Length: 131
Image 1 (cartoon, helix red, strand yellow):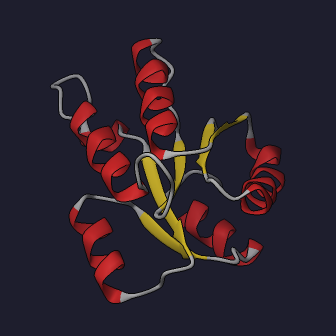
Image 2 (cartoon, rainbow, N blue to C red):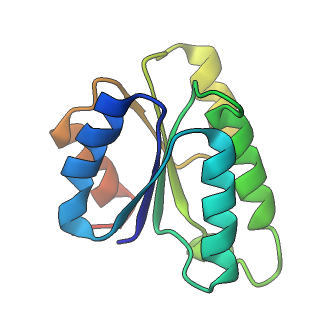
């Protein structure tokens, strides 16, 4: 499983990287703009990410905007819905407005920080990324 972690907080990035590295390569982006660029490059190279963990609150471009742009990149006929990247939003803001906004923009999951290992694994299983 190839993963992109988009997170501006060092500690949160490190935690996610430690939890996910056993499942495959993990790449890092420190803001939404870098996440969009990384997702675009991976898609163009023919090796898109299996999972992107997007923090909602980041500098330069937040996770909500990055989510919208990444989903727009996947609207080509070649990007079948079942083959699209799984995107899980991560945030300290567990408010209903952020959850609804992310769901409308087609995120696949939502994890509240601090991220618990059991909840992350449960989400990965639900998304059929691990067994």
